[in-house]
Image (cartoon, rainbow, N blue to C red):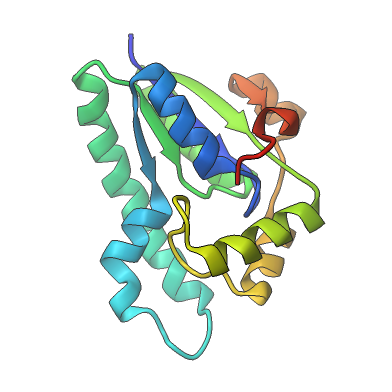
Length: 174
């Protein structure tokens, strides 16, 4: 039975690199919300500063669109490797509930790294614009998103299958 892998963690934890590698190993399809967000909404993004309400509204619409697309992927027999930026427990739980209620197998993979390591990765990615680059993440957005990150608590870990991915597994990956 195909599975939904939900890859989550704070900004710069190595999610994109990990999700791409997992998709190769499982023959699954990796969908990163940031890629879709940039393609659909970058031309309309407020130029002067980050506007949380503007972002949140569009992210909610994208989550629905991505989930609808994921259902088709799952129906084809392939795994869906989803990197959705669900950095807060409530949003993660709501999405996980949707997946489970619709009868799909779910595996939540959580990545993390120390703040200084993540900050340096994001700054390097902003400059190098390599394989995992989707958009520039300014320092103030990185800091804000980092403070909003909520690691799974005991309740979330008892509700859903959670795997904490060791940082050693990501050595040399960005």
